[in-house]
Length: 309
Image (cartoon, rainbow, N blue to C red; front, side, top):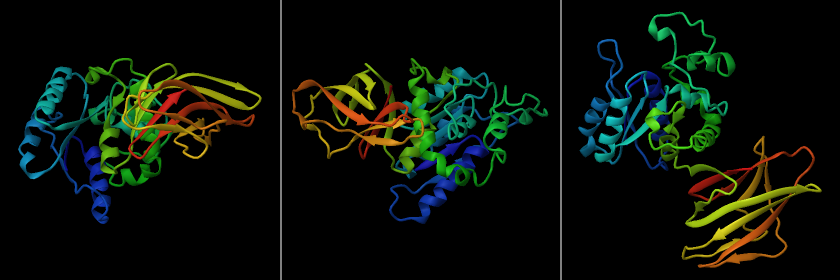
């Protein structure tokens, strides 16, 4: 895999991942990371980044280009995304900057920052994080953060899975991501990170929103709490060629609280959803008074779907 970035923060982050993957034989990817140097004091044109990346296609199995919104270049960003799609090159895009991905290691954020940092414009930052993402991160979560930090991934690695979940949550809370290059905040760096470490794809949805999980269509239609029992109704429409079983052994659905504490469900009688079946099943979770249910998790080896309650 070849990863071309436009900034030294991104280059440092993915170069460290490259070192980690190179230390172990079991990883799928061998990764080369390069940075497109800043020219004439301004950020590199993302269209030219994609063109540059295309030159390496014969040498690599997969190519990613990592860039961000970078102020007023929406048309260039769209052109780069369209060219990459035609060229079978993948994009990891962030708005307003790569710091959006960094921030998601610490909180679910919908703050639309105006810039990455103030210092790169030759100004002393006085916004206290109201305008720039870097200062917000330093003040609220990560005092040691600096752009281009060599061990950035190491500092964030224990929160990597949280960031993957929160990035999926952020996508869900954008009603339309067809023109994601216009969104702020936004990041899909999580797609690249999950692929590098061969982690499940994560998605978010909500009650009464149908979704596909392992090729079967589900919809959480209702949930209620009474006498420390949470009852969840799940409609299952099985158009796949395999069965799905609700029972007290195969626990691929969990109830989570705000601390991501997981509870397994019980069901009075095992229910098998055969090919062609469409039925609603009730499952139950026993909780205590401190447990505040926030989401269901459908988990498999390849994917994870969170349903907000």
